[in-house]
Amino acid sequence: MAKDSTLRGVRVVSLALNLPGPAALMRLAQMGASCTKVNPPAGDPMAHYTPQGYDTLHKGVKQIACDLKDAKVSC
Image 1: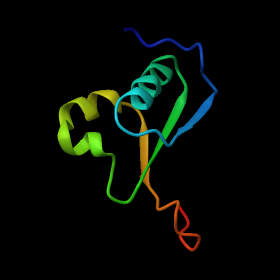
Image 2: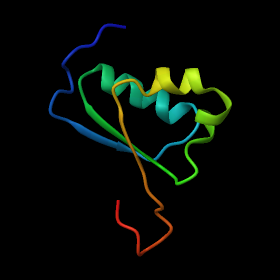
Image 3: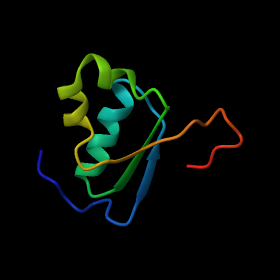
Image 4: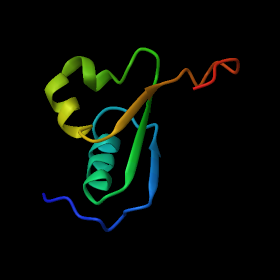
């Protein structure tokens, strides 16, 4: 699918893991949104069982690791 600029200027932060959330995030990025994915410290499980699929879904998506369960950690 070709990239368009429908969502240019929109920022999206995703905490979703596995397939449905990243698939939606990929589409938002294709539509021009600035997307950031927050991964747990161990990473997204999908990245471990299908690295190529994970890379495809996260192309153009900024990724950060953050332990949201630890109040002392800043991302």
